[in-house]
Length: 492
Image (cartoon, helix red, strand yellow):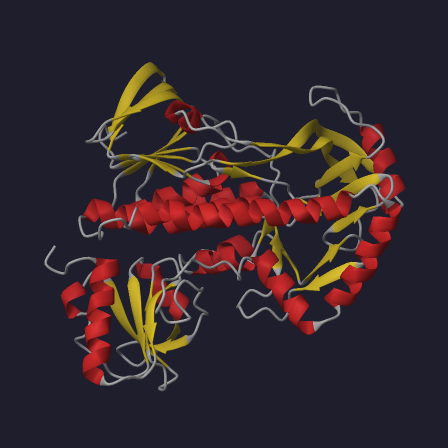
């Protein structure tokens, strides 16, 4: 293992693996430390949403992930309200159902292919940072008892009990929102016809999802029976909840894992502390409603990786790293609130409130604009970042996968162009030479739509700057200012 990586990533879940792969692909020496060894089937995440699949597409791995899962074009909420995803404005108008470990397998392979160093059985016990870097203390690393690893930056993607967050002394304020949730991995004698099954009623909540190999994950919550997390779970208890909530237990048998847990809502006050960053569950946890957890963590890493790479390559404009906290913490707060609202609506104990919820929800879901907004929220397509007064309305918004033409005349797509990990300047006309001073940081790509103005797209697929057709001199001066603001001084 390299003694002096530029970045140490703590945690080998999806967020950590994506970050390590991005950094290595950008030529940044990176070491990932993971306490676990081997592949664990004990996963809570099953949903990969459209925006996450777009991010995978921008890395050339979307199809590898899709091949390991099953597509669902609509989501059922509260039993009788359906959110249609099939009309979403994306190449991926569905939610992909696949266990988290399938996503981890693809991300780990990509990270290794890119040159990241992944170390299993390495437990981080603490860290100290100074003005020049971070010293990470590690035990169990490759058979060594204890050692220290020095890096320019450290990223804690090490989950809800984050050692990195605790070492930084950052609080994790919040509260438990639902207690005594039961999990089981089982075989089913009569599997359901639907890929996902979920319902909530007077008795509780139940959810069924396939692993894809004959095993199924069951999540069950009994409104009448709240027990501590350390109370043992019996399969008969889960069968009973399933029958009362779903009308059947699908012949559950041969449980290979049973557990009980509680769901928290927590958000760290800052995603950055000096040379240390937090991502994924180390920074935010929330209810499983809407399947946002893994997706939000992956999007944290996609936001942070290119900014760290720019800083370490020496051209990041002042304050770029600080935008990770301002942009992603706002998203984290929104997800905590949104998933919490869904959970409270699903688990409300009042029969009258449930009746109102079901009627109002069904009416709202029948309206086209409401359907679109609900689908875009759940899928992550609605996520955006703030813009300043006077900015173009597109600034901070996700960029659709528009058709483009390469220099040799080949038709392609924007998200294929983003696979370089660089900024992309989209233009509808021939503007060769505009970005030459920023070669290696910005690629010029022509859209098929010849009326397109100029759009500077960040490496994570969001608009940094845009303008419609304007006089050439004014437009080029504004573009140069935007390039300096986002891509640094070209002399550096």
